[in-house]
Image (tube, rainbow, N blue to C red; front, side, top):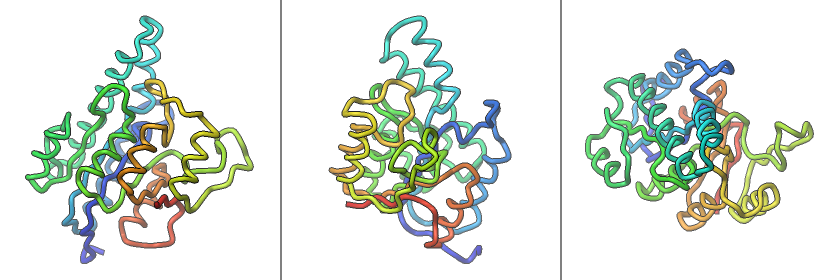
Length: 240
């Protein structure tokens, strides 16, 4: 396995909640396993990981929202917590990772000069970390964006609420748009509200024409298969 090589440019979005246990404790074992997947295979492309805020960020956001009805302030808390999660991953990757969390596209462009894995969080209020990952993938001309979430992909309806929800293995941008409109309307998500895609991220996707895979990051088995170059992966593939 060590002789294999991954040489394409990839952006990975990892939900912040995947870094924690159900009891909201840091899942150090899982984080180490996540890092080992990258260390097993030689990698020569640009790799950028975007961390979400997750459950812990939502705890802060809910508290702030109870004090002050200020969504911009809630967004700022979410961004800061996503950057803390990014620093956590940087510490786990050690010398493989660029040591600073980029806070803008300009800082990202500088980080790319060092040839290390880059790990970042949110960028600005009003923008989900999924939108950030799409913008980063577009800026870096990534060949693929991988979104790791707590379900196996995108379903025809919410799998957490409906037992008969079906996994959609392939989607076009227009089909994804229909799902978003039918399930959430056209409004943007509130601070801390978790959606795999929202209206803003959809618009970035349509202009960037990116290829996307949405898969489970709960046990990392499917992601490890992807990173090894295997094709038989349980996920949703989104293409133009």
